[in-house]
Structure formats: C-alpha cells, structure tokens
Image (tube, rainbow, N blue to C red; front, top):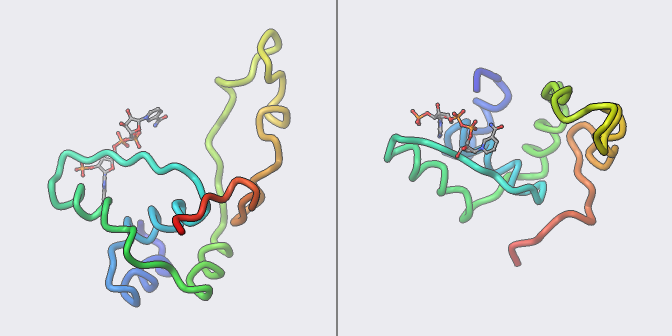
Length: 106
Ligand SMILES: NC(=O)c1ccc[n+]([C@@H]2O[C@H](COP(=O)([O-])OP(=O)(O)OC[C@H]3O[C@@H](n4cnc5c(N)ncnc54)[C@H](OP(=O)(O)O)[C@@H]3O)[C@@H](O)[C@H]2O)c1
C-alpha cells in the first residue's frame, strides 16, 4: 500500500492502491477474497470490474519485488507436501501466471 509505483498507477487510473492491487490479482485469473467492515471500502473493493490496467501498469507491477508467505504449516513429512518445493508447484513465477489458469471475463 505504500509503494510509490502502485500509488502512481492508482493516481493515473483514478483508483485507490487497494483497487489497483485487487484488479491486478483478478487479471492474473486468481480468486480474490476481500474483507472489510467499512461500507466505503466494500464499494471500493467491488469496483474493479469496469476498468483495466494498461500494459505499462502491468509491466511496472510485474517488476515489483515479490515476497511469499511462510508455507511451513502446509508442509509435513507425513502429509502430501513433504517440502515447500513440492507444495509450490512452480506454476506461478514472479509477476506472472500460468496462462492455462487464466479465466477471461469475456
Ligand atoms: N488470511 C487467510 O489465510 C484466510 C484463509 C482462508 C479464508 N480467509 C478469508 O478471507 C477473507 C479475508 O481474509 P484476510 O486475512 O485477508 O482479512 P483481514 O486481513 O483480517 O482483513 C482485511 C483487512 O483489509 C482491510 N481492507 C479491506 N479493504 C480495504 C481497502 N479497500 N483499503 C484498505 N484496507 C482495506 C480491512 O480493514 P477495514 O475492515 O477497516 O476496511 C481489514 O483490516 C476473510 O473472509 C477470511 O475469513 C482468509
């Protein structure tokens, strides 16, 4: 939310940083689960369907450093995923998505 790049994209599109982030995830074909108790932010979070990021926006976002959660709690020697590498199947590369998983809104 503090990223100057995301702030600039939000300013350029007339959107909030949260909307830019949610829209980007949506454009990756992923499911976004948002939660807010604030009516204004609820409206904000749903207002991502009637506009899109530009190619330049997407490429700037793709350059942002990526950090991933700690997935240790999904990994156990007796479970289906014995290492983090097994859990993380490699389909999602920094800033990109597996296009076979992309679902178009068209
Ligand atoms: N995190 C998980 O591992 C997980 C796993 C399974 C299911 N879920 C479900 O997924 C949903 C979301 O979980 P979460 O962990 O992401 O929720 P969270 O972090 O507990 O809550 C979302 C936070 O984002 C803020 N927020 C929402 N819209 C915003 C906006 N437009 N701008 C700025 N801040 C905004 C909310 O504040 P305000 O309320 O003040 O707007 C709230 O503080 C929940 O229904 C949860 O049950 C989560």
